[in-house]
Length: 244
Image (cartoon, rainbow, N blue to C red; front, side):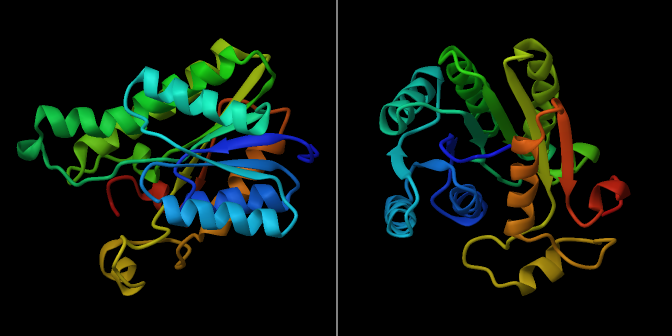
């Protein structure tokens, strides 16, 4: 699939993996709407950098809490770009909460961003009336049971199920896919040594890179004969289940 003249909204695209996905889409010829919540400077710098390189890029700010907020982000993205051909649900919330630590607000907080927002944004995109593709960023933990982050893990498992269900519900007009990263980047403020100390066993003995995650996203966008597929980019960690 030729991505030239197609436009994609990437949520949480101001920094980290989201920024890499946005840059790679632009490099493939697509227009990119960079969504951000608080990373305004980074998002605007990325937009300006892409425009300076001759790409089409826009930036939209917005919360993703609740359907009304998600629809506003979608409307702003369509208004900026003129039309959208795809949605990459990259924005995510990750906190470690064991079972005794789960509170109503922590549970709802993870589900609000990791599950409800992609559902609302996908429905808003479908309501735009165009054919297209949605790619959801998941987590290799959907193949395991991690007691250190139960709300987060449950929200990503539910998003994987939504990806498959919506692939049927929205076919043939809209395709869906999911990408499951493993340990890609350390938390903000931590060095690469953090991964060696905390990321667990990686069968391929190397951590996936943001560019490899972006490669998987672009593959699903271009693979017009596929829907409901989930790709793992985790160095093989999902094969270990709970043994990471």
